[in-house]
Length: 168
Image (cartoon, rainbow, N blue to C red; front, side):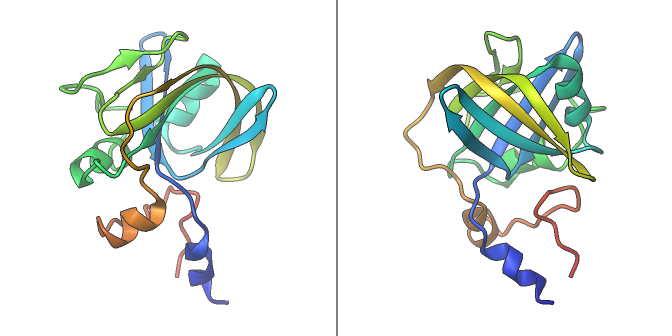
């Protein structure tokens, strides 16, 4: 089987974040997707080993931002290659809270969606969270970053916890 076929799927890069009490989680995902328009719902897919997955489950809500091409590897590394369990991903950068209390940064973000979890599905290594959008803001007119841009222009790698990771 040629697993490189999986690299032909198109997706974007997103930061999903949540706060439950003092516990904050944030991570980069490549699996954000609008599901329905009425009610307006999106899905995010988060690895169960990511601290953020547990925070979303406890909080019952999350913020989703669409990462723009203005992001560099330092930005991606901040949210994608460290754990929120022992690193404050919002330290030293501008951050704002959604109406639900979840932090996000407008830096390198095209838009923000504040979502209330209305469903979840265990899919083995990951959890799919369905969120009903309760607030949305356009933050920038910069082009959204695609996963293809991340791989070809930024020369980024797919980490083992990513839902698109395929062992070759």
